[in-house]
Each structure stands twice: as structure tokens, then as C-alpha cells.
Length: 246
Image (tube, rainbow, N blue to C red; front, side):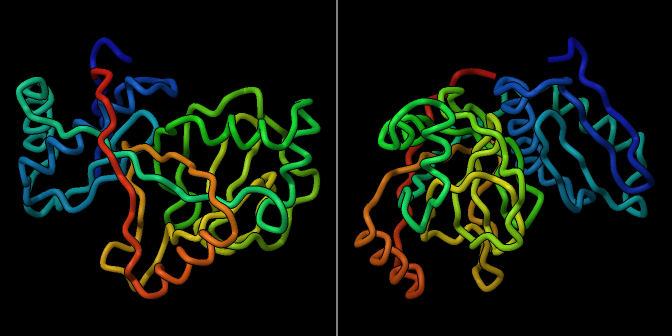
């Protein structure tokens, strides 16, 4: 974390608030806190915010507020962060069917790391993963904190199409493909949840700053959830994440 936050110009309609130069939960927590504080302040001239691993891009309407005026507002807000109540991050459970046709590369991951398949599932589903940012494709979560015991290189030849909902591993990262797309990650499972649905009130299911936890399920449960998703009757399992401090 920088000793002093950097405020950087980004064109005529945006500025970037940069809190550090590395990937860390502490820095990302500051990004989330600043974003929530700005939302609470309801600064009407701000039109959109884009959180990343270590910074927050703030898009604004230059016809309604000048750069320096906005800069002063944001710096004042940052100085008051300790006095603003920030809600606990949320953990959302991701039911996941591992192996078989749903995760055709899970044996590759097991073989590469010299452990049995059931150990891959146990390790992968034992942690809560921070969603550092959303990008690449609509709703794709950049997750942190995967255990090195299941780290595996990307496929030498990427697939031209991967089904939306597929859960994969690439190097020391894990992630979920929100929509059908090409990709080179080692596929270990699949979730029936839709991370992106253009027809839903909130198209993007996950939010940066929250956490996810993979929960192993069998095929019967997968089909049941899939039907509930289609009927829009599925109830997502969530719980508050214990705060570690900013």
C-alpha cells in the first residue's frame, strides 16, 4: 500500500485513485471501501466507477464538475473513510459439480500435482476466494488465494469453445467462465449458476470486493439447481465475511 494515495488523470472524463502497486487483500479492501464511500456520498456528477486489483477509476461528467473540484471532494472523502460505516464483504456459495464431462481436465490437475482427484476437489473447495475485479468477459471474476498445491499450467492448445459456468485453473489462478467463449484453462468442474444474464435485473451476479466459495455437488443437485435457475426460483446461499481490517 502506498504511504500516500495517488490521484491520476485519465482523459477528460475520468481519474484513477491508485492505492498500491501489488495484488493484496489489504489494497483491494481499500478499493472496495472507497467505492462504497463514494456511493454513500451520492456525488451526482460521478457516472460510473471501475474497481481493479489496486485502483478505482472514477468516471465523471466534466460539464457538471471540474477535475480539481472532484479531486478535492474525493481526497476529503478518503480522509473520512475511518468514520464511514463499510458493510462486511459477502461470501456467495458456488455449487460446483467436479470432474467427468463437467470438468474434463481434473485428472490432468491431479496428475500434475501428484495428488488424487478427491484431494484436488477438497483443496479447491476449502477456501473463500476474494473477487479482486470483474472483466475479460461479462461477469468474469478475477479471484485470488488459490492453493499452490493444485496450481497447473494452461492447456498447450486452447479450446475454441468453453461452456459458460465452467470452473478452471490456469497457473496459480482459478476462475469461472460466465459465458461460452474460447479459453485455455484446465477445466475441473462446472456450476449451474449464471454469472451473467442480460435479462436479469442485475446482469452481473458477482461483485468485486466480495468472496466466493465453491461447494461440491452431485449431478442430481446440479440438474435441480439448473431447473430452479431457469424458473428464477433459486435462492443463493450467502453469508457475511469476517472483516480483517483495511
